[in-house]
Length: 486
Ligand SMILES: Cc1cc2nc3c(=O)[nH]c(=O)nc-3n(C[C@H](O)[C@H](O)[C@H](O)COP(=O)(O)O)c2cc1C
Image 1: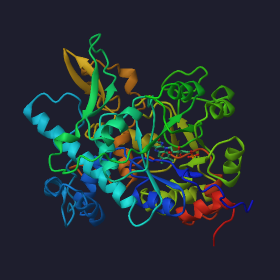
Image 2 (image 1 turned 90 degrees about the vertical axis):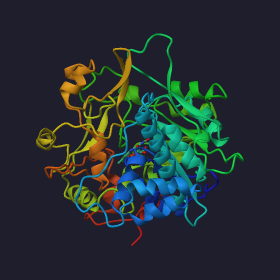
Image 3 (image 1 turned 60 degrees about the horizontal axis):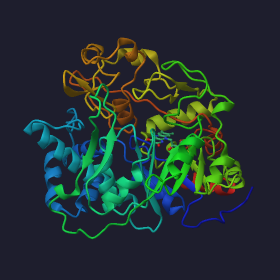
Image 4 (image 1 turned 180 degrees about the vertical axis):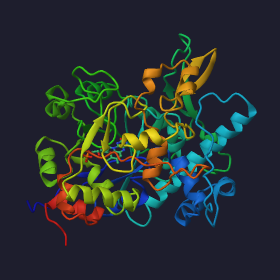
């Protein structure tokens, strides 16, 4: 122990992983970057997050938006969402839902408004994370939540983001998307549309030219791209061609917080998975690819960092230890509940095979009052009003959007099968709630949260043996040196 960081080059030894929704926000990422790590803001749902922050009269969000180079556009968004005195107990007004094929005039207007909101929100979040320091800031997006990605990344690039990190699906189109957006060209990502006619391709796109108030067309600095992988095959496939090759990999194992890759062994979807040695990634084979890489999933510790270095990695990506630090976007109540339950030895973490509408296994901390509790789940009336996880599907010749967590009759009316809906949690509403942005329904019902954290809580326990708060700076220092700050 006692080893100090000696490898602080342009490639950081410690990456604070992206954690949506708004858990890894600008404050956490900035704190980590100042402490010498790569601080990563979450790009997931940022448009909705900023719409809510503005309705709560959040001055910091407003400040970020005030920095946007096209002030006419910024003002339009402020006119729509900013309430200096907050909502006065009223429900949040939601932005329109993401779609890929606006057809009516109303849909087209809503779609443009939404894209503008995504650009400006990502710009504001990255600008706030980069404020007054020279450290490194990245943004994380999930390939499964594709529709907002091109507009979100354009906003982040405008703000000078240093890294883009993507997982949850193959990120093979991301390098090209970043090339295009950094030169102000239209960028797109292909979209899987269920039951689409053979040969018809669908995509989500964003054309920077639609932001007519931006005066520069000088190329922007293209961020470096890191792909999150859980298999050598995916990593080697991405590295094989210049068009798909990232600047590095995050190799994430199944104990990590958030979504996990499905197990390689037998697994029936919607049952809780178990992992075995087949899920171990051959790190030597990753190293042999020759690109920089970081290890994630129970590596947020001094021993984890040393093991990663010994395996040839640049370092580690950690999530849970930062999610539970003072600077994270998690509500203080939820954070304290978790830290106290952990110090009392009563924290149970499960890998839930059915909760996430994405179909991926999802780590869940078992906490009273949250949607980990079946009673809380059953008391919630199904409602899909945010829609980030909706899957496009062709129905009667038109693209419609479905989510297995939406009300069952609606899901079935779009061709979905009832068993698919079982056990699903509306992660959109639950994750907004975990970040203190719960929707309040008209009858007074407040959307409950869920917390996704990793299975390995050893470092958190070391930093907070009695359930007391700690900062992300303490976590950085402990991972690097093994020493606890006072
Ligand atoms: C609260 C939470 C939310 C997460 N959300 C995301 C996410 O939105 N995108 C992503 O790529 N990874 C996400 N992760 C994974 C982390 O970025 C990181 O890779 C992981 O937590 C590392 O494992 P550890 O938790 O054992 O440190 C999340 C993790 C946590 C704890």
